[in-house]
Figure 1 (spheres, rainbow, N blue to C red):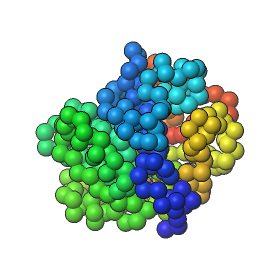
Figure 2 (cartoon, rainbow, N blue to C red):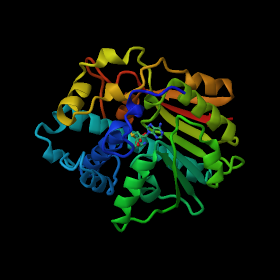
Figure 3 (cartoon, helix red, strand yellow):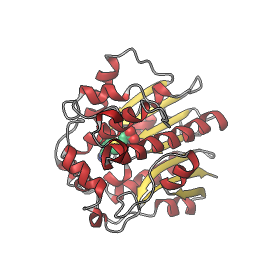
Length: 300
Ligand code: SAM
């Protein structure tokens, strides 16, 4: 698989390269947590933000943002991540409680704390896959708090551009039992071949009834959004150029591929969930979120 610009920088932890995006989502979740109308709560998020030099000065409350909700980064983007967290929390909870799954695999887990936050049934195992530096940072921060996971948690340090199936099964994952898979905020950082490999491998390792949710960006030309308020604000306020981190190769039709393998798929804009939950981002001019889609799939 090809090396992308963002992933050849050698930065392995959360202080640069693609790892810093995990802090961005954590800061958004911290802000969301302390809102009176929050859609998702993550009390661990602000500990990550404060612990990393790259983000120690970022806001963790909307009141710390001069323009508040009107700020394109900490207002709108944080609303987006708050909604995404809630929708995917609900997806995981439906899968484990409604469908009895006991294996949860988080691709590009970053600073996701679902193993600590969600009411997961006994016997549930959460596999968290990310790069070694990100997982080490996460462990160090959580070890310094009184946080205890509510489910067995297995951290698997690897690069998802390489084959990962053996590492997962050697860590105890059972392909014969149904599972719930999540790729939240990940696939657009991976080369197209790695996305195809991930989806094909999920199919191969999924027993009938397994569920997968993931996020994609459908834009044919991501760079045409370079001047969108969201990308400009992220670059100006944080020095992070998200477009340099995204993989700009043409994307595979992963939902189509899953449907062709017998999965039931549905593709949604985030805005649909904004209407459903009464809060979240709405479409705007020159919108960096225009092509974002949340895909839900169940193996028949
Ligand atoms: N899913 C988490 C969430 O929503 O809070 C984290 C999302 S963060 C935007 C993207 C994550 O993907 C980062 O933690 C990053 O380290 C991870 N990632 C990106 N490329 C990766 C790769 N090639 N292998 C493993 N993890 C990767």
